Image (tube, rainbow, N blue to C red; front, side, top):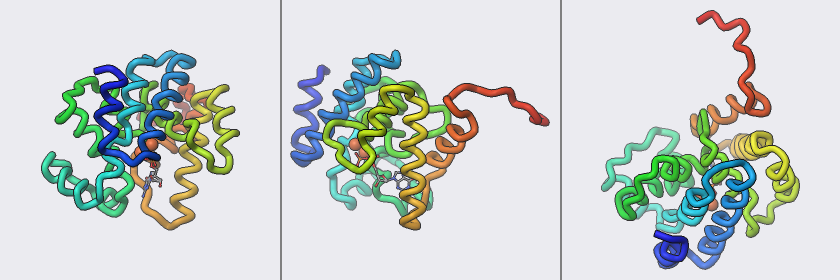
Length: 199
Ligand code: DGI
Ligand code: FE
Ligand code: FE
């Protein structure tokens, strides 16, 4: 399917605001993909579809997850904001017949991040933070960081998420922690010598 067809698919599922956000994320993802060498077509698709399940009421999201056989961990059960990403990825596969693993994973991990994020994971994660519709304090700095160094900008996004969640005494998903720790241990995304490793 092409962008216009995906737009027609998400339109009835999303509020006006969320639809506009999705269009903006798709555009931001294409720009980041071009800059950092990811596939712009996959970035466009992942961007337009990433929040496809976001406006479904929570009971309906739970219902659909059950239908799809998605089992929730304790942290996931306690964090409804994570559901749309997990559910979204499976919805794309089951209902829209998208089989591209990179696209499905980028959507699946767009909220938490994960260890060993792919280029497309990073592109979507960042695009979601810096899209044109975002106006939180600090967004301009993050846009500049994203323009200069993708790894550093992803780290900024992860650090913001972890700090914000801890501030609100909210549970933090293991994928978020793993993404954050990996970024903190390997500054700039470059693998360092594993000195002192006894394995
Ligand atoms: O769907 P969007 O609003 O565009 O953005 P998103 O999918 O990145 O969702 C952001 C929300 O998800 C934000 O309120 C923080 C929450 N979130 C992200 N990681 C975690 C989390 N919530 C919990 N409880 N645990 C996490 O690890
Ligand atoms: Fe989201
Ligand atoms: Fe989003």
